[in-house]
Amino acid sequence: MDISLIIAVTAVAIISVFLSPKANNSKAFFSGHSPEGKPPGLLMLTFSQVTTWIFARSLLNAAILGFYYGLWGTLAYAAYYLSFLTGAKIIDSVRFDQGFSSIQAFLAHRFGHWGTRCYNFVIGIRLISEVFANILVIGILFGVTGSTSYTAAVALFAVITLIYSMLGGLHASLRTDLFQMILFLVLLGGLTILVLTTGQLTSTALMFKSFDITDPGPVLILVALLQIWSYPMHDPVMMDRGFLADRETTRKSFYHATWISFICIALFGCFGIIAGANTISGEAMNDTLMRLLGEVPMLLFNITLVISAMSTLDSTLSSASKLVAVDMQWIEPSLINGRITMAVFVLLGLLLVFAGNKDLFSAVAVSGTASMYLAPVIFFSLWGKRTDIPLWSYLSCFAMALAGAALYFTESSGHTHLLGDSHKYTKLLWISLSVLAGGCLLFWAGMISKQQPATLQETAV
Image 1: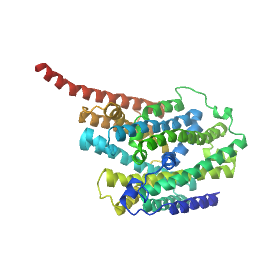
Image 2: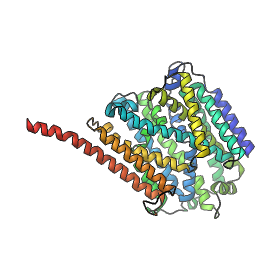
Image 3: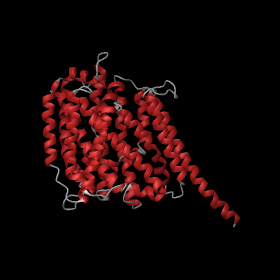
Image 4: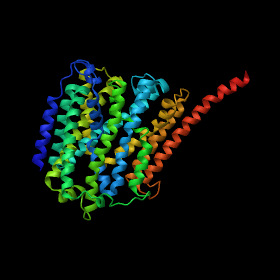
């Protein structure tokens, strides 16, 4: 199966390289326009939205959560994809209602330089974690950590994806996303049919874990419903795609991406649920699936993971180059600088793979918690159109969210036990609630503090 997987991955990589036209100007490289200057259409934009969010880590997380926590674990991860709905509203407000050219421009208008500095810090960490996580999944598929096959797979995958990403930037990423998403849907459909023919996908298997609101699965659903308000705004890949096409195309792409991605994640998560319902004590998920399904379905299972990793990595690299060159303006937005930035982010991702944390969901939970400092920004400053929120409210909210993310990381990894012996997802729920409520309270207090001097002045007059 390893040889078959290698051949399949090589074929996808070669086709992706041929589909990546070399960018001749910075507009194609950073803005995603075709050589003729045309923005992407609805199908390309929708499929790019979906495939860049259904990345390898997400598929594996959905399956693993299903394996341990049943249907409720998979639904919890799928709930994060409701972020496309809140993301659509965020883009519509920032770009079309208020006329800003980027999220950074909006934050700079409201909170000055510190508004963009805090935001760029959070999304920079997010981009590095995405590079790390998708490269890590490839290593897991091809070998044991530290083995020669693991190291070779990680290095080759990173280099191949980097090469075609460097050729065309964001426009190349959109083109390869379309191809890779079509291939992904075909493979997922074939895999689902094969699994159905085995008779393993039954209502009994799907419900092997009963619903209990205190169990990790249902608790994680609540966490997702808290985090989806801010999660889209801290994802530069999603936000970048909100500034490419006209209003109607952009809005429809987000709405279609919601249901397509939700179904895909739920379907893939069902394979983990099947494994969880039939596992033998001490047996890993992949070993259970191999025993239940056989080699051909598992080959398709692994190929879908590789394709999703590839499609996400090239999009992450194009967003990283845009962040550094266009949004942060650290370097001149030239083709050579964009390509160098991509290489640097791949190098950082590889360093984390060989020396970093191997818990795939930790990165989601930590970045999702850190992103919650943006929730009051969205509620008060964006949708509420308040321009009187003081900088101290914004910075205090930012500090609180980072503290919450750090606390979850130390608690979930066992370094601290400040929150007792509850399950790590229960801790995450309380941390998320505290950060959200505390942030909104800080913004409300800041708004009141701005109003009081004006009231006193009117009274004096």
